[in-house]
Image 1 (cartoon, rainbow, N blue to C red):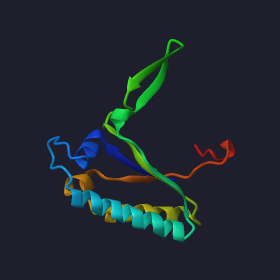
Image 2: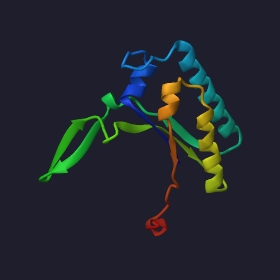
Image 3: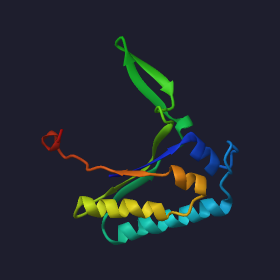
Length: 135
Protein backbone atom coordinates (compact mmCIF):
# COMPACT_ATOMS: atom_id res chain seq x y z
CA UNK A 1 0.00 0.00 0.00
CA UNK A 2 1.32 3.42 -0.94
CA UNK A 3 0.17 6.17 1.42
CA UNK A 4 0.41 9.90 0.78
CA UNK A 5 0.09 12.58 3.44
CA UNK A 6 -1.00 16.21 3.64
CA UNK A 7 -2.00 18.82 6.19
CA UNK A 8 -5.10 20.97 6.39
CA UNK A 9 -2.88 23.77 5.06
CA UNK A 10 -2.19 21.72 1.93
CA UNK A 11 -5.90 21.16 1.37
CA UNK A 12 -6.60 24.87 1.95
CA UNK A 13 -3.91 25.91 -0.56
CA UNK A 14 -5.27 23.48 -3.17
CA UNK A 15 -8.76 24.92 -2.75
CA UNK A 16 -7.54 28.50 -3.10
CA UNK A 17 -7.75 29.57 0.56
CA UNK A 18 -4.95 31.89 1.62
CA UNK A 19 -3.14 30.44 4.63
CA UNK A 20 0.24 32.19 4.54
CA UNK A 21 1.65 30.32 1.54
CA UNK A 22 0.71 31.01 -2.07
CA UNK A 23 -2.50 29.28 -3.11
CA UNK A 24 -2.58 26.81 -5.96
CA UNK A 25 -3.60 28.18 -9.32
CA UNK A 26 -6.11 26.38 -11.51
CA UNK A 27 -3.15 25.38 -13.70
CA UNK A 28 -1.31 23.92 -10.67
CA UNK A 29 -4.30 21.80 -9.75
CA UNK A 30 -4.90 20.73 -13.36
CA UNK A 31 -1.25 19.67 -13.72
CA UNK A 32 -1.42 17.58 -10.54
CA UNK A 33 -4.70 16.02 -11.63
CA UNK A 34 -3.30 15.18 -15.09
CA UNK A 35 -0.21 13.61 -13.51
CA UNK A 36 -2.25 11.49 -11.10
CA UNK A 37 -4.64 10.41 -13.85
CA UNK A 38 -1.72 9.29 -16.03
CA UNK A 39 -0.05 7.47 -13.14
CA UNK A 40 -3.29 5.68 -12.26
CA UNK A 41 -3.93 4.79 -15.91
CA UNK A 42 -0.36 3.46 -16.27
CA UNK A 43 -0.76 1.28 -13.17
CA UNK A 44 -4.16 0.03 -14.35
CA UNK A 45 -2.74 -0.79 -17.80
CA UNK A 46 0.15 -2.74 -16.24
CA UNK A 47 -2.32 -4.69 -14.07
CA UNK A 48 -0.67 -3.42 -10.87
CA UNK A 49 -3.42 -1.08 -9.61
CA UNK A 50 -5.89 -2.70 -7.24
CA UNK A 51 -7.50 0.46 -5.82
CA UNK A 52 -6.79 4.13 -5.21
CA UNK A 53 -8.66 6.87 -3.40
CA UNK A 54 -8.09 10.44 -2.34
CA UNK A 55 -9.36 11.38 1.08
CA UNK A 56 -11.29 14.49 2.11
CA UNK A 57 -9.64 17.28 4.08
CA UNK A 58 -9.04 16.73 7.81
CA UNK A 59 -11.72 19.29 8.71
CA UNK A 60 -14.24 16.71 7.48
CA UNK A 61 -12.90 13.91 9.68
CA UNK A 62 -13.65 12.68 13.17
CA UNK A 63 -11.35 10.79 15.52
CA UNK A 64 -12.86 8.31 17.94
CA UNK A 65 -11.22 7.12 21.13
CA UNK A 66 -12.44 5.62 24.38
CA UNK A 67 -12.21 7.30 27.76
CA UNK A 68 -13.44 5.52 30.87
CA UNK A 69 -15.35 3.06 28.72
CA UNK A 70 -17.23 5.70 26.71
CA UNK A 71 -16.58 6.79 23.13
CA UNK A 72 -15.10 10.25 22.69
CA UNK A 73 -15.45 11.98 19.33
CA UNK A 74 -13.20 14.87 18.30
CA UNK A 75 -12.98 16.77 15.04
CA UNK A 76 -10.13 15.89 12.73
CA UNK A 77 -7.43 13.26 13.12
CA UNK A 78 -4.78 15.86 13.87
CA UNK A 79 -1.46 14.25 14.62
CA UNK A 80 1.28 16.17 16.39
CA UNK A 81 2.60 17.29 13.02
CA UNK A 82 -0.86 18.14 11.66
CA UNK A 83 -0.28 15.70 8.80
CA UNK A 84 -2.93 13.19 7.90
CA UNK A 85 -3.44 10.46 5.34
CA UNK A 86 -4.38 12.19 2.08
CA UNK A 87 -4.78 9.21 -0.22
CA UNK A 88 -3.74 5.67 -0.90
CA UNK A 89 -2.92 3.27 -3.68
CA UNK A 90 -3.16 -0.48 -3.28
CA UNK A 91 -0.91 -2.10 -5.84
CA UNK A 92 -0.24 -5.74 -6.53
CA UNK A 93 3.38 -5.98 -7.57
CA UNK A 94 6.15 -8.56 -7.72
CA UNK A 95 8.29 -6.97 -5.02
CA UNK A 96 8.56 -4.31 -2.34
CA UNK A 97 11.17 -2.64 -4.56
CA UNK A 98 8.61 -2.30 -7.37
CA UNK A 99 6.15 -0.65 -4.98
CA UNK A 100 8.96 1.71 -3.93
CA UNK A 101 9.64 2.56 -7.60
CA UNK A 102 5.98 3.42 -8.09
CA UNK A 103 5.91 5.60 -4.95
CA UNK A 104 9.04 7.43 -6.15
CA UNK A 105 7.04 8.62 -9.17
CA UNK A 106 5.00 10.87 -6.86
CA UNK A 107 8.11 13.04 -6.61
CA UNK A 108 7.62 13.88 -10.29
CA UNK A 109 4.15 15.32 -9.68
CA UNK A 110 4.05 18.98 -10.72
CA UNK A 111 2.95 20.92 -7.64
CA UNK A 112 3.84 24.33 -6.22
CA UNK A 113 7.26 24.39 -4.49
CA UNK A 114 5.86 24.71 -0.96
CA UNK A 115 3.72 21.61 -1.49
CA UNK A 116 6.64 19.65 -2.94
CA UNK A 117 8.78 20.54 0.09
CA UNK A 118 6.23 18.94 2.44
CA UNK A 119 5.29 15.95 0.29
CA UNK A 120 6.15 12.35 1.08
CA UNK A 121 4.74 8.88 0.67
CA UNK A 122 5.04 5.69 2.69
CA UNK A 123 5.15 2.18 1.25
CA UNK A 124 3.82 -0.53 3.55
CA UNK A 125 3.00 -4.17 2.87
CA UNK A 126 -0.56 -5.26 3.58
CA UNK A 127 -0.69 -8.29 5.84
CA UNK A 128 -2.93 -11.21 4.99
CA UNK A 129 -2.71 -12.73 8.47
CA UNK A 130 -1.29 -12.17 11.93
CA UNK A 131 1.37 -14.77 11.11
CA UNK A 132 3.00 -12.12 8.89
CA UNK A 133 3.44 -9.73 11.82
CA UNK A 134 7.16 -9.12 12.03
CA UNK A 135 8.08 -7.28 15.18
